[in-house]
Image (cartoon, rainbow, N blue to C red; front, side):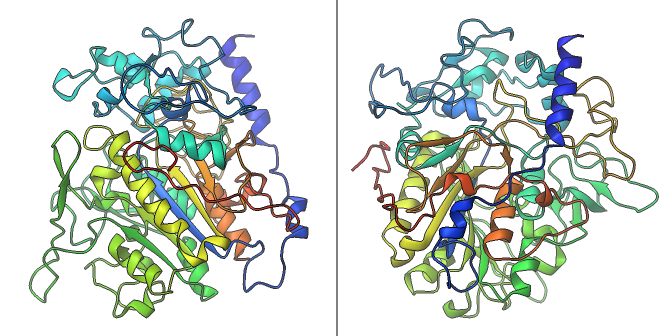
Length: 521
């Protein structure tokens, strides 16, 4: 049996494993709290951009400590991850370019190809050996570190992504968490809140690489690219736009009257909507290289795709006491509104935070150092709130940007559209009859971290999870039930193994970091 066929059989076998039931620790958790199954009463999901696991953690916990910048030395007994070290993949790699270290001087780099089909081709049926040829982007004008298309094999270590490595030292992270499907930002964001990329109604434009071909029986497509949310005032007037059918986690939270919100940098318009004109979201910032970008990116805002949770005109909350509740803002806010709520004692139960573009970690217009400033300033602030004692922060990513990662996850969703290429033309396994097509996955491996007094310390979780595992955590913790309609929430691996809910155990202490260096203060 060939390598690819062996891997295909393995991934199909893994795909039918039912995720474990909730950890027995939960039975011993503090009980009697309003709504929640666990002691977590406030969840803050920081949803960043375009990083594979190996790109940030491939050599964890071993940093080179070469040149200027922060020094990182791991604690004794730090667990190893499934990374590039000591697997031998740094020197003995099947790709045409070997993995190589990027330093702080190379923080700003070119953006890589992270299309739904091209990422599948890079995986090459599980051989993981076609990254430079299929998703590598070489362009010296945006810093390819002299590697051309081989830049896609670059990785950072604890001398650059120092804060994230220090969070890993003191809290919990997963080394087996995956993009629910292949593809760029929008599918990842939709899977985070709904576990679903099917149900797209094309409002403007043509399918192209944004959605699969329209199903003539239903009139709907599956999102595989970055179409914009239909009706968003701050969208590009010529962009392909879609609206999404079905429900998301906001609907479940609203049913139980649980406060929640999506808070995104630049969402507040620089020119408000009027009876005759649309709102304009014109705020912008420059990254450390001096390159300026508009703060708000519409296709990074998943709730805008669903009419029932959209705020198309970017209306502000009517007053701070209603942030997280249902008013004209409809749970969609600017990041500034999050801190208004938090500082006034109105922190929502569930909050999704999206950085302004220059700090979201996306290669080209953002970078690890601008991202680090955002993460550390945000987390330091959250740790100082009185709600910290019963809070969990999850850091997750929307896609891999195409950056090399050596692990293929189980293929739990098969698909046979012309856009699929994991095992050959139109082949991502054999999709069962009646399943929604265009959701080939799991896709690339992504970082996932839990920062909380209830998180295990210096812990690496090896259980399989995906983006919709965060959705499942919200559903389970607030007893919301499942979304149905083939949402991946039903099969997502639970995240409770990253926590210690035994009330007799000491809590994990807060850890304040330096926003510039990422070092412990």
